Length: 453
Image (tube, rainbow, N blue to C red; front, side):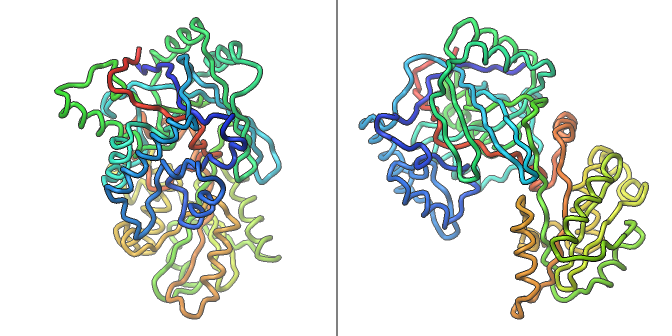
């Protein structure tokens, strides 16, 4: 099913760039204005110069896209960026730690992937995309004729044969060994052995791919292919416009981590704890977690959520004005009674759907459109950051909102696969795959007359 191919990556020249940490970046869509300034101050050759971010009020005009193109061409002329001489599949490992102190290594590979429409069942999404986001990326890729960042996708490989095959042919020393801003260590190797590459390509022919991060970038690649088809009359199967650079990770990898994304709801007006609890009666079994400091309340709530996992849908709810925390357990058959056949069973069993469609929309009366238009929900993968924001809002006398923090368990990889296999869509911010892959380790330069075999 899936077609993958080796390619000649365009990479930073270590003879010119002494510290890779100064030039690589997180994905463009998680970089705010403050982070953008900080990245630019590190090194004038920072990848943020090419993989433009779009901040509020920062209109990415034609001049800015053309400016990125001029910089891109100049860096190649100056040998800041050099293209590898051999086709490669790149082995990409990340060593990292979680807040609980446990250490992990996530293994993946970077290759070109043949484009397929979502309806073909070869590349499967689990999120909805928005045209305004893809318009920006399309203009950037079309102007520069390059893909600066990789899509993160998953593939099934229970036996781990693909990674084992690549590791056997992997050089001893990595091309790069880079520590990111979170202390995660990223290592990249180029595998060029022809037999190994062929075995890897063959292994993917019966597999589907599942997008983890990068739905908008994938949709952008489809739009670029369509655009080039109009310009050229057609896009050949082996055209670089029919391919996209992806980071591919096995679903079964021991280092694959999905973090929860907690929701801070900014309830319009004033609502106290008793009113909140009363609204939720009849939908949830509610237990207050008592005693201790704020941090202890949160810790105990999370522990109870973890203990209760497995067939139950559980949320934590922290109300910072009263400094009270609760465990919410969904009552049996509530989702089926309310939504019935209008909602597929796999969605009714998803924590983020229960929270968004039942608790926030129906119980609290905050519809999806209202939440989006008025910014009534903030999303946090970092619980400390979420708690800090909730408390600051609670004590702000000028704030006309009542903050309520909902603590989430993570969506599992199995749920992502099931949703995608059934051609369904998850709510916004349902998954947070960690760590993020770095932008700047590899660039896919698009050369129109080359062939991808």
